Figure 1 (cartoon, one colour):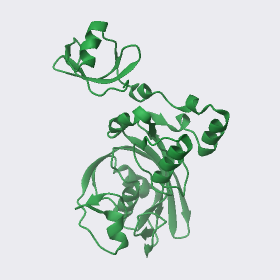
Figure 2 (cartoon, helix red, strand yellow):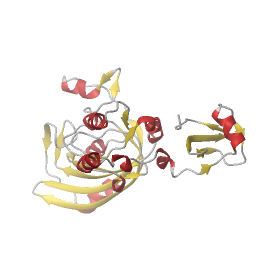
Figure 3 (cartoon, rainbow, N blue to C red):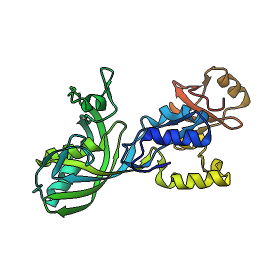
Length: 284
């Protein structure tokens, strides 16, 4: 679905759960309350697919605001520092592009990450400061779309594709630090999560219309569509019988992850040392 602003990820899951009268609804990655865009929701047996999204890259369109720093690293937090940004457009572009590749990133204090069992945002709201270790994340690509100057502030619109666990708020903060001026995020729109892009998602308004017309089932993507980048395997009936009983079978194909089919989609299968096994079944 397309998550609107001013709605938490938990709110969206609860909304869909309530409207479909089902308890089994999960998501593949949260968005900040004021962020918008692609949020993959999995229903019923489809919730088994959630772990396979964990290592998928995500892409965003974001706006960096140079000249302002807040405690949340976005414009919705408390102002900490306001200072003019004197960097040239070329310096801004070069600084942003320098973050492409694997980097060390410290998550923002206002995040859902747990440190010693404590949610960071809970500690931050109590005025506590936790020692947050940096972690490796990857910026797969990043490009500047526009730079607009407003008195002492500079708005930079950019597109970025990142690995799991990357905080765009922290990226904006770190870009400002590299330029020697305050920086924070002022806008965030997720454009894709794995192979799920904006054009494959629906708005709440369209979801409600489909509920009224009884066509909501037509909007649900089949589970195997999230594995469409994987090669397909169709074992013989005898081989499939063994696989469904937890027995590995010998195959003459490369090691890796595959889509396994019988009469329908069975689930992802993994080949290791020439032996195939069903990693997780989606047909039961």
